[in-house]
Image (cartoon, rainbow, N blue to C red; front, side, top):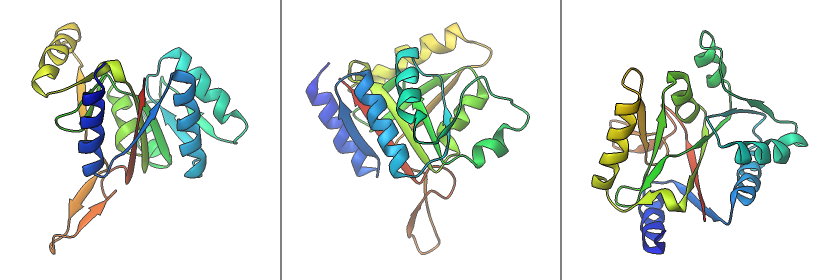
Length: 187
């Protein structure tokens, strides 16, 4: 891991209105995610595909807070409506790109893409070791993912909250997706 890449990512991601947190280890990442969820008063939270250690730690952190955690696999039929009512989503990023300030998520389940796209608050967790400097460096892992999953590979780039501008060019966050995004970098 290169501290310069982490610093460059933070600078770029925050310039795009994303919020960046750094933690030491999976347990601390779960504590930080749970603190954000409590701060946002999230009662219904959708989880993406998470490493077992992080998911279990997050479940423990949220247990006493009265949160309902919706875990995969999801019922695809009613999922968009269900996720639309959820206040927050928590996902694990495959990569983060310092040059663009984007996190990159891989999934083979269309429903899991909605966990980062529909709730008002999105929390992404990424290992510092999975951060790369340039978009060009992302080409090989993305190509490999598509080759390993030729029928249903989804790659999503997320560079901060949803944003759009009205006719007067006023920037508005959260119109078509999360109004607030948090990236937790695990050292």
